Length: 162
Image (cartoon, rainbow, N blue to C red; front, side):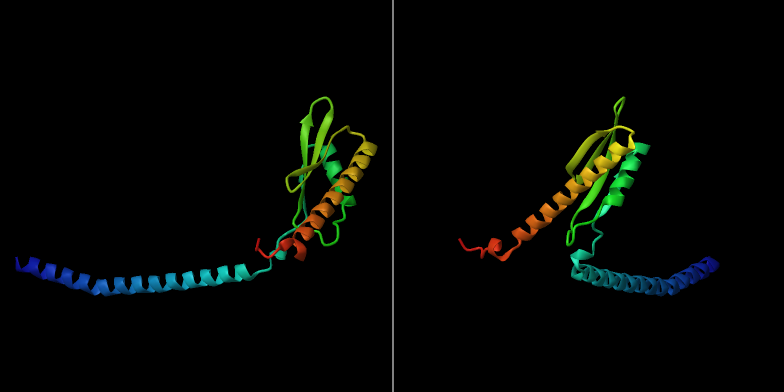
């Protein structure tokens, strides 16, 4: 019985010695958590101060499936020249199957369909279609840029007083 009390006492002493180390570990973890939280807050403040113009802009995304679609994309990409000072747009070239007719090519700017045509596997037709698609897309991007500038002109903003 005395041996059992001695063993129990040793166990209690051992537990009491381990508790401070567990508490120290929790304090260290809490300190690390606070530092991580502070670092995240600083990162969020930096992100808010960043210039919105730093986003990737003017992407031309290919969603083509066949050789006709890839050739059209290549021709479009070679002929494309972004209008000066244009921003806030992405161009998506999609291909839809059209059994027996060739393929349907759709050009979208910011989810607005600009050009859609059934294409045959003839290179001269691909070139003419790519030229037309580039011209229509450039006109649309220019129009959108001009409209955006007009909306933010001084005479359009108003004072908020009726």
